[in-house]
Image 1 (cartoon, rainbow, N blue to C red):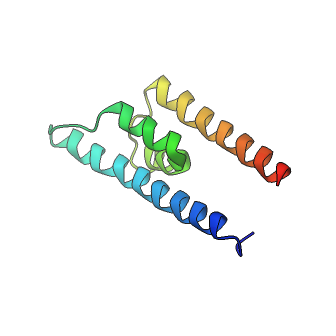
Image 2: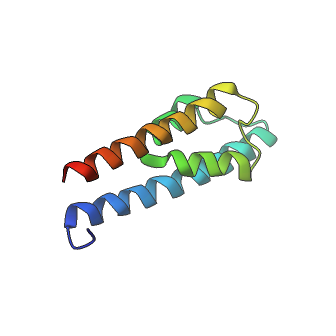
Length: 94
């Protein structure tokens, strides 16, 4: 699997987008505390859809951010579950 450059690029992408999602939660939490301009909620969902759902989810609970929003508590794990299902399906095909 790791000899295939497509999988290597996919793993690098997943790692980068998860780190970004994690620190996006941190940045937005800090902005919320300082009453500054906030990150739009749709950006969190976009990052999650692009593969960063575990990072966003970890950031939510690490920084106690967006944990009272039902759309985040249900939406981010659902996106992650769908992504896992797609990975399992794709791995079975190839």
